[in-house]
Length: 269
Image (cartoon, rainbow, N blue to C red; front, side, top):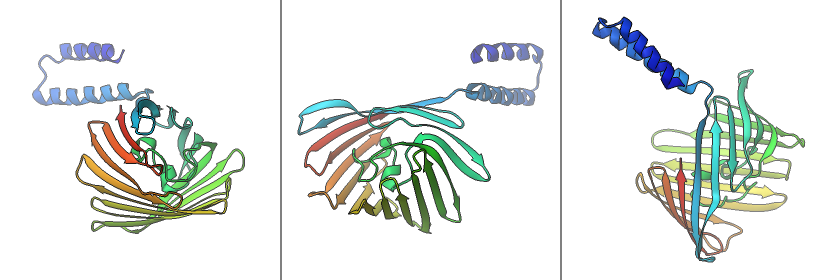
């Protein structure tokens, strides 16, 4: 429909501007490009997603769907269907100078909780809510290097997260974060340090009286290759991963705490 409207408009304008100057034609091109963008973006959501297939040395078989997602995103709404975790469906808006989010989504927690499925290097989360979603309302903002989020769920769940940039710039960045969730009586504090291709995260969490720690370190060899290690208190061995990403695809070779070797291919669209 948009192409038909634009074609008719272009033909009509062209007949009336046969003798237009070069400058007038440039202005016409700019106006048509603006109109095309407006029509293409009017009310139409963008579609994105990812799909992963993986091989496990224990089962000795390839399988797909361990991580799969199709998302529709508009100017102030987001709906997705995930093959590995619950579905997100929420709207966003601004009120009283603050950002708001309402619907079904993951409450604020540790950095591992906040990490998107298709952005994770390891195929499993370190610890935390493991991708659990809740129905509720969340507000948040950022002021002078302090970021904050507060969530209230439909079952009176209260969760919050605060981050602070201790040091930023000159090639070295350090931030600390504190999160709490009264639904499972858990609190966590974490530190993130990055310098060039190096990144380190250390998290301490008290979940229902059970203390746990996790250390994750990564190194970006170049634009396509990366390596990472992860050690948690409840694991007998250290996890490691090697990644290769190019053109919307990412290969990951990893070992988890059970010692199994996993090869995964994640494709984004």
